[in-house]
Amino acid sequence: MGGELRSLAVAAVLRDGESIAATARRFGLGKTTVFNWVQRFRERGHVRPDPRGGKPSRIEPERERILRILAERPEISITGLRNALAAEGAVFAISTVRRFLRNHGLHPDTRSAPRRRKRGSGR
Image (tube, rainbow, N blue to C red; front, side):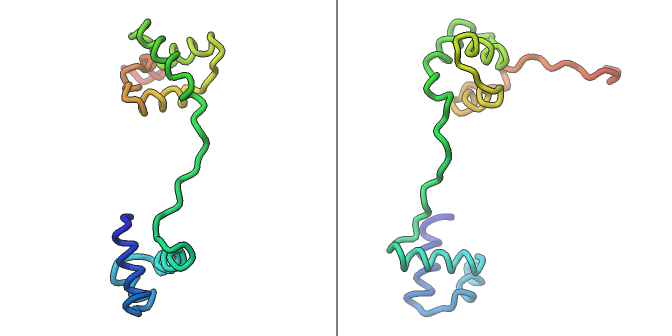
């Protein structure tokens, strides 16, 4: 949600004296959301959300190695890339490699190995 909406809701409560419930209804928000924004403003003087957490990417430091392998073998599948990285001591799950490729605009779907047909599918 944008900072402008947060500011408008907090101003309605603190400056205009509107109740949290009325403000929540007016802006289509939950009462707890408005309460938390007002509380944040009172404590911190702003309504910005906290930065998102998360762990740093383990694969990102291997960026140059990955780009080198892709340049040397442009036809390589995601599994092949994962195996090539593992052969050089950098072991990652296929999902991690796929996410890296997607995040860097390297289109993981075009790098996938062909899928096997299920037995008995009749195709």
